[in-house]
Length: 105
Image (cartoon, rainbow, N blue to C red; front, side):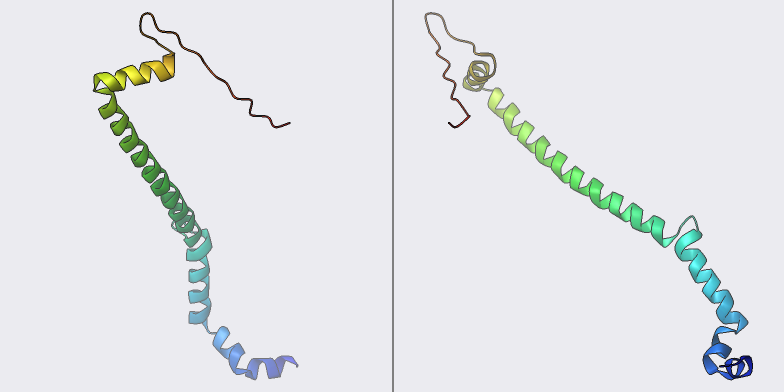
């Protein structure tokens, strides 16, 4: 295909049109190089999704902590927590700690 045939080609005429060239440049610029580009929006969308997952996880932890606080508001709950976490005991009471060997032979 020589130069004259290339110029007569309809696709060449379409793509060599100044408006098509300017529009193409504008689209490429907006998609990749602008400060508000599609790439930037995609990264920000990923960050938003990650933060939403983190928010849901933290809300779940807050609810679990509220339930724990409600349990600790009773005398039995405080006693149970002290026995489990700090190995506290009542007077004249003996506590035996049993440890299981987690390695299998």
